[in-house]
Amino acid sequence: MKMQADDPLKRLKNRALYYLAKREYGFVELVNKIKPFATDELDLNIDSCYQIVEDLKLKGLQSDYRFCESYINSKKRKFGLQKISYELKQKEIDVFLIEEFIEVLRDEEYESAKMVWERKYSSLPSDLNEKNKQIKFMQNRGFTFDTIKKIIK
Image 1 (cartoon, rainbow, N blue to C red):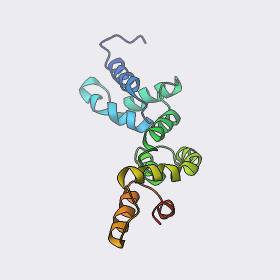
Image 2: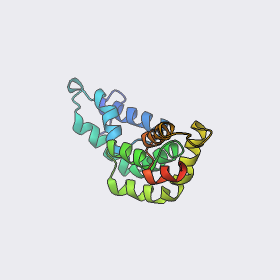
Image 3: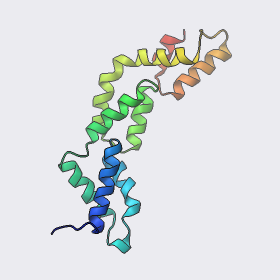
Image 4: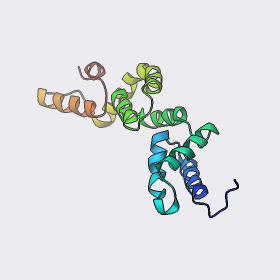
C-alpha cells in the first residue's frame, strides 16, 4: 500500500521523525510524544503509535541504547548516578541497559560530585547545620552517601 502525503499514518510517522531529528528519544517516550496526534477521527490509535516507533526502531532511527547514552552524557556532570538511573527508569528504559551504562560511570562519580560541590560551595562546612545542608544538596543531586562523605569530611 502506497502512502500519500495526506495519509494520517504518514503524517504521524513524519512527526515522529521530526522529533527524532531534534534529539534522541526512548521508545516509550517517543510513543507518548506522538500519541496525542493519533486520534480516532483519523483512524489512528495507540497501536498505530507503537507500530510507527517499532518500524523506526527496526530501521535504526530510534534506539534506546543511543537515547540512554545521550541522556547520561548530558546529565553526568550535574547529577549523580542514582538520580540519572531513577530518571531513566521513569522513562521506561530497560533496567539492564541502564545498569550497563551506570557501571561504566561508577568510577567517575567522585569527580562529578566534587565538581558539583565545588561549584556550589567554596569551603568545607564550619558547623553541623551547614554540613547537613551540603549533604542534603548533594543527595538531591543523586550522589551516593559514600561519595558525599568522601567530599564533605
